[in-house]
Amino acid sequence: MTQVLSGVWALLLGIVLIMLGNGMHFTLIGLRGGIEGFSAAELAIVTSGYFIGFLSGARFSPMLIRRVGHVRVFAALGSFMSAGLIAFPLLTEPWAWTVLRLLVGFCMSGIYVTAESWLNNAATNETRGKVLSAYMIAQTLGIIGAQGLLSLGDAATSALFIGASILVSISFAPILLSITPVPVVEVARPMSMRKLFTSSPLGTVGIFLLGGVYATQSGMGAVFGSQIGLTAGHIALFVAMLFAGALVLQYPIGWLSDRMDRRKLIFGAAVFGAASCGLGWIAGGGLWPMMAAAFLAGGVTTPLYALFLAYTNDFLAAEDMPAASGGLVFTFGLGAIAGPLVTGWAMQGLGPFAFWLVLGATFGAIALYALYRMTQRAVAPADETDSYLSVLPTASAVAVEAAGAWAAEKADAERDTDDRT
Image (cartoon, rainbow, N blue to C red; front, side):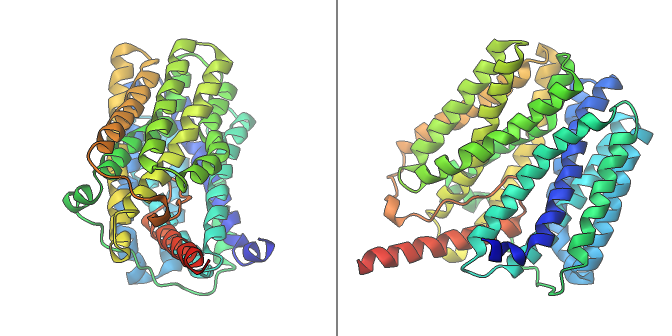
């Protein structure tokens, strides 16, 4: 593993720094928005703005890279993102924040596409799985670590926004100063929604609903904490718990995924997520039960994303997987735009604890649809399915496609070994 990391350490360090800055800004929106008196509905629109920008960036970034090159796009997007982060405390109006979030989301998407292209190019078929795992761990640690940095300043001032901007700015130094090969960006055109749904109804519907869950957790979690009166430190801990659970639950769920009917695992994980949200709602203002609920509900969200990708690929030919990956990323993005809007509307009308009700209802819808699909399609034998994809919802289509190719190759190699024995 040390030998593998020696070739990509600069990229991973840069990603950690980027995620520190981006993770700080996600929580700061909820903290500062509460201080400025923004309503839940207004902050929901601001949150959705990020995912609109992210979806747009995923579409246009490859074209920009092909036109002017990786380095120029990477540097330009980094500069715009850094400037956008500094502008938040200067323009404390919901409409201005929505525009800035569109900008930051677009830039982050392009940064992911560029960094993941470099990362994929630096890996070989033998090391790709380990490199992708290290990349996902670096992202998660960056988001969690960002919550700790929020204790170093006051959200009512500009200091934390400036700190986030500085982290993003310096994150490009280790990447740009160490990367020499310039890879070709090859992102497949997304599969149409109709064809994607025909190939895997559960994968399409499930990942759309999960997009709403993830965006609500990451974007509205701090808003919820602010509205129920948590301190800044407790809000940061709450957001950290939403992501920390994935580090613990990713491996066991992935291990089970390759050994049982994935639909049953999707159903079980979704029920577990709904029950965790029920705990958060019942707990009221109880701090530690609420933290446990965040840890468990957030913990199943990332594995569910990987499960939907793997399950969809189980029913596709190898040549269709890249296009399907792009389609699933796009579908997830649509859900991520809708989720915060629904949650913000519910919190505005029913109070802040509607945060848990919307999350629990969405998890419940995933579970019910998985249960229904079990009656409509025969189970795919475990020995004929591809390996589990360890992919985060924040990844672009580049990483998702690379992970899909690696999983298919690994599954083929394991089947060949079984045939020989």
